[in-house]
Image (cartoon, rainbow over all chains, first blue to last red; front, top):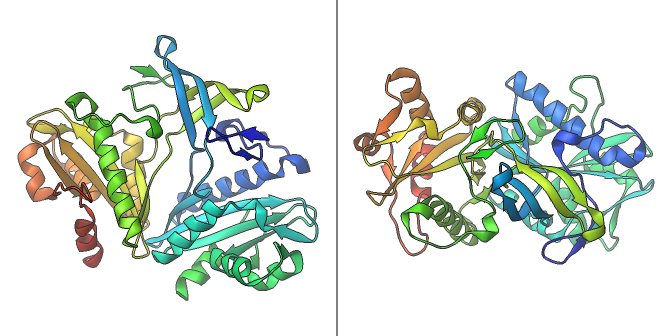
Length: 195
Length: 195
């Protein structure tokens, strides 16, 4: 657990996107999922198919030592109010939150902050396309789901987690490959065409 | 001048968006411009007109002290490869870079890094809308210009700065007000309608 500058506690998160270990042990799967998406985004960008960016981790800087070439000596992770990725596909705004779970039977909605839900609702209200990419580590399966389906589930269902079995009907499994590692764009194309 | 973690030198930049001084002295105008845009974005969001976000400043974290509640004790500003703001307007992806200049006669293109130019070209290639908001502090005038016009100027003209007088024809002056402080969205609407 780490303490945010606003006093809230939150799960320990990735330190720097430049320092990610390419480990496939399950404890690092959260980072590995992110790296897989970043690699896929590079693939799409090089082929002029889409421009999807990783948002920098928001950090509150408190002290900077300018005598040492602007070395930041005191700073804190801020609570994430937006999502992991956003960008543009065929002119359309695209927003993606990526989550990895070690849970076998379901995806706990507690993984998503209410600020993130608010953000995704705002994106949808403005006509953007919003998605979750959810990885079930134990099943070695990754799905892409429209955020609005997850939002509806959260509003209409009593349970606080989405069963693994329901992901097939809510979204689509993403094929894993060498390059792109996670070919999620065809699903975005499908949704973009129909909305 | 601050030193980036990659060894490059760059202009000293804003430390934290949460710590901005609301000063209207000209030395702080860069920050004030950013704050004016953030306030305008909040205005638009509350009225469901657009969702435009400030991108977090990219920071490379080197050391974290977890015993002190995840206090970051060593970190460096990374070179900005993207722009200040992005978001969604009527489903369309929107990207904005904001710049303030104390120059009276022209806007020096050296204010924009070539990585930022690359980014903006990529946005345009993917069908997104990309803009510069440029403030001439000494004239107390702020303009919004399509990024493609600035890119064309950079490619076709020999001079390394855009004359102040040319901003009226390249873009549009943004009216200053109480709320929103900088009503730039009508120009984006105009461009969105015609492209």
